[in-house]
Image (cartoon, rainbow, N blue to C red; front, side, top):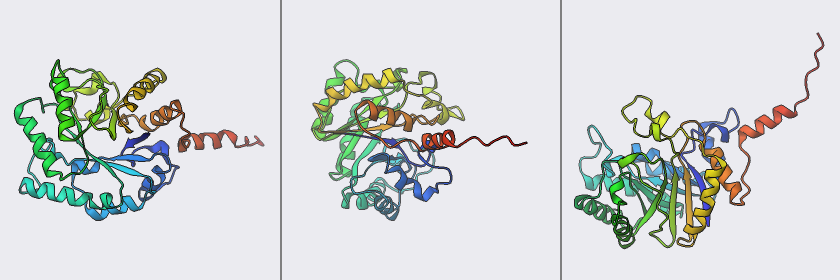
Length: 292
């Protein structure tokens, strides 16, 4: 089974008709896609009542991939909000309870930074995280090539299987040590995650630039690139019962259109983009007669 969705729901303008209010966007989003990645949880641990509201605003079949808080993955810079590690994990796990209770939490995504390389200390960090997450499904995504270089690839994947990590597979540019190749290996029989980050190699390492977020994920997949993934998905589907695909290439507003494009290639029948509906209506409107 393959589910396709996007990172976040607020910034995909072509999903919504003009005038759609922010509070209504998640419900509208859920008519297009069955999953979403919550990225606001990376910047701050979300209140449990907000997570409950998001669960209530979506249909029964809908599910969430929640991104781990930045203090849990080594991204945090500046003064920490939490006084200690224990209270941070307690708060984060408490925030997940509403989604867990209604069966809408697919997994927590731990995406580690480019400087999180393959060392004994970092391996121990991953073990400690799994213990602190208390059996909650967790997906793991690396950004440093050392985890997959040479014979480390097999060792990393074997470690993930033993420790119960779901593999978050990347489609991203080949941009040196701070990027990883696409490894089509499941580490969990039930679920694999694929995240499409685009292939903008030139913009990948511009985190010091003021507009780096607008550049890194600026990419639109073409038909051939997505068709190639259809073959890859056939291989991965033999390893995991469920595959969740998240498009994160939205610097230029391309994620929703690419997601719909892949859905069509896979034989699904997605809802049309709101932007296409508006365009069609405009084309169907009769021309006003030039009277004067």
